Image (tube, rainbow, N blue to C red; front, side, top):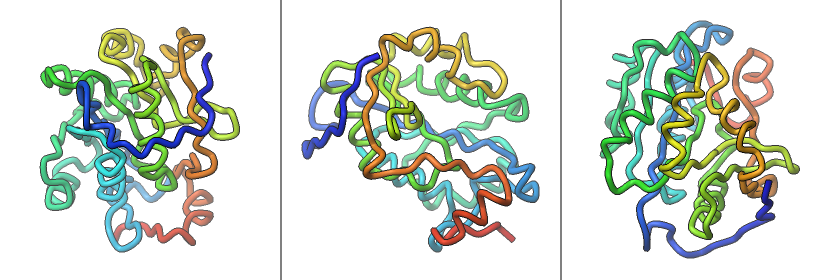
Length: 222
């Protein structure tokens, strides 16, 4: 497992080479948060999904695809104005777990010939901003085919996969494991990029998580 430390790169990662697509996994139903889609949580005056999509764009990802699931029709209607140019992918099997959403997103991106890699981000980690995205993209530009943000040395999101890994990731993505099985099998080849000084990988899964992050402006949707 490689380690890139704190990488600062002021160059726009879109300036050269194949593009890096952004993939937002936003299908979760928020069962422990009242049963409303996580994508529709209010965050700093907007929607959590809108915030995450802007983070991907500002960090250097293009194109950006988002996988929807729970309440897909409502989520699509409400985030489309916030996400011009974003491809919205509906995963009818979202309840089977994150793995199905990851597969749906990779299948959608397979039709984008110019995308040399994908950076995967989760909708329920609002304290990850564009700085972390840009650092992971910089590691890819430096040659990493597998790269992930790290927080105190522990691997987290966002995670980047060069295109040659997509088929293997999709084949291994089952249940709520997402890409974990594939990443464990390829741990020696992952470049970790420390991002703990610019981001935090707090998940938003339970009422306790919501209470902890309320100070950051998160509210349940009506």
